[in-house]
Length: 236
DNA sequence: AAATCCCACAACCGCCGCACT
DNA sequence: CAGTGCGGCGGTTGTGGGATT
Image (cartoon, rainbow, N blue to C red; front, side, top):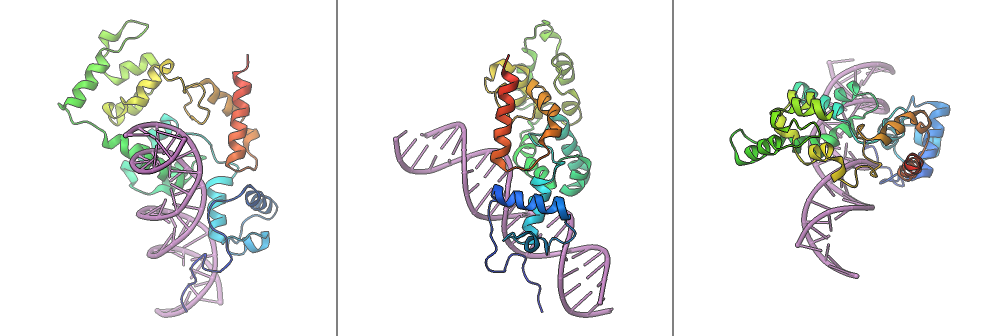
């Protein structure tokens, strides 16, 4: 007798979760816990398989999940952990409170791997251009001519010296780095509320709201809340 | 304005290890 | 010990939305 595939049963719903389903799942777990994922959907009245419920809860609905983009420090941790552990996403997630293995996996494949792959080889035209860009960097302190390393730049700009120092300087001297150095050049920086960059004042305010964010809601709910909070913060 | 491309991320799938019988 | 069920994990895919042509 073979094992039944998880969602083989007819009538079970697949695809994106609705806010109603989210609410049903969260209400049920809050009242009854989740000791048996297999039985949970039936008990809760959901037309989903247990695996789908578990995934939705673990990756999205848990109250302790941190929302927003990854900070530089988190990215640094992921890169270092990946060097040590390889693709052991769940182990990494255990070391990054509020982050899920799925989230870490996604950010690795969509951001960090590309960044590392962009690492220029010493002596190439690209790296030479970046070095020139670094050396011509103009700061209020007029120390640009003295700057030759990422840590020196970062010590002035309060960006992330450690990540660049420990991983690779040129990897991080890309567009995102410069947009942080010159936030005024990026008009979206101060209005992009989905940005998790803690350098921006609204992110600090969102952190302060953290306890109030531990509630039920789908994607639309969160974005609505973010934009409402943004409006408040942007008000004089 | 429409078509196409690209990216980010939520969700699914199949496999594995462990506990239980 | 073998069979079974379940939770958990990592790889992969589907899709929506923004960017580009």
